[in-house]
Length: 284
Ligand code: HEC
Ligand code: HEC
Ligand code: HEC
Image 1 (spheres, rainbow, N blue to C red):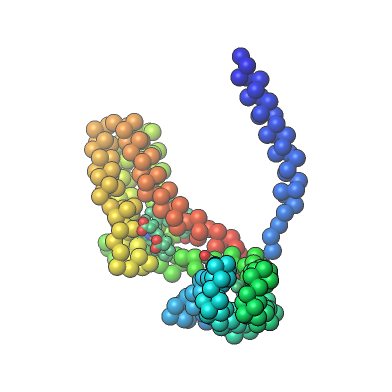
Image 2: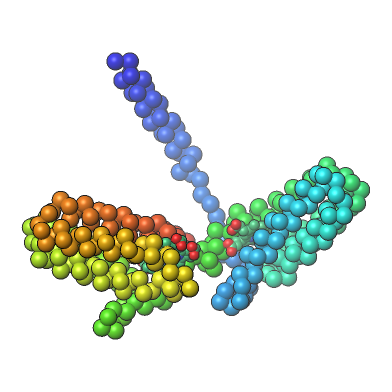
């Protein structure tokens, strides 16, 4: 009997806390700015590599190396990494001149001076000041840059069926969705032939979709196998048997499995990022 009041108490408490927090939470907003156009040249397809991103990885490694080497008192190594940081930190404004005011290159000679003197304390402080310029830019620009230049997009993918007709990715998705629901409706209404036909149609549509995976997954069969491979083919075979034998509950269960292991699994990897990108780039 003691459990019930305790549960209620916790419940009321969390609801109360939720209400308390709500106004502050609702008032929060983030400002994201579009990056300068000159950034584009440092990304695929204009650039052969994701140049900007690789410069960023170098910066992070250099910051870490400077801090760690200063801590163990290896002056030569600290100075070596400061030289590299100097080069790449300044590259930010060389690559994207509009971002010149976002960095503080004068901090690098200071860093060097403190390293020469073995003043680890002030070296650490200066590293923190540099780190703040990294963080300030990231807060405002990073999410949109990642969305624009690195999130996969599906708009230019055409999906072909066996007759050679082609459709967009989105049209294929709408067909998949219609087929899934046609199967479920027909099972519910006791129309096995319709369910069976729709089951075959769904398997075909997924097959056609599967031919488009290598647009992005070049020379890698594993992603397709993971979602549309043997396990999925087996489920579709079992589904046909179940429908033909009039086992409605088994068929529904298999449809549930297909929805999770095929549709939801693929959506969790690709669609969430796609939809987020679309939402962020509303005005494009
Ligand atoms: C590549 C893996 C992949 C698989 C497998 C997949 N989807 Fe999708 N789906 C996506 C992506 C990516 C989007 C967003 C792209 C778009 O809308 O253009 C999407 C969008 C959708 C949409 C929204 C379409 C719209 O009008 O915006 C529906 C509905 C949908 N999928 C249904 C399904 C169903 C049902 C299945 C399973 C039978 C399925 N999908 C399997 C990747 C997949
Ligand atoms: C003027 C803007 C700007 C400054 C200054 C800047 N960055 Fe970046 N950084 C970016 C942008 C934009 C991205 C997103 C790139 C992407 O996702 O392709 C990024 C991404 C990164 C990433 C990749 C994160 C990830 O795992 O995806 C790292 C690491 C990074 N920056 C390190 C640094 C360090 C360290 C500094 C400072 C020494 C720094 N950056 C300064 C703009 C900046
Ligand atoms: C527009 C590009 C694009 C298309 C088309 C695409 N994917 Fe992906 N997929 C990605 C990206 C990006 C990742 C994450 C990075 C990676 O693992 O390569 C990913 C990751 C995956 C993963 C997780 C990583 C792994 O290897 O297990 C699976 C599974 C997957 N995709 C399956 C598929 C299937 C199946 C299709 C076709 C029906 C497909 N993808 C089509 C871009 C795409």
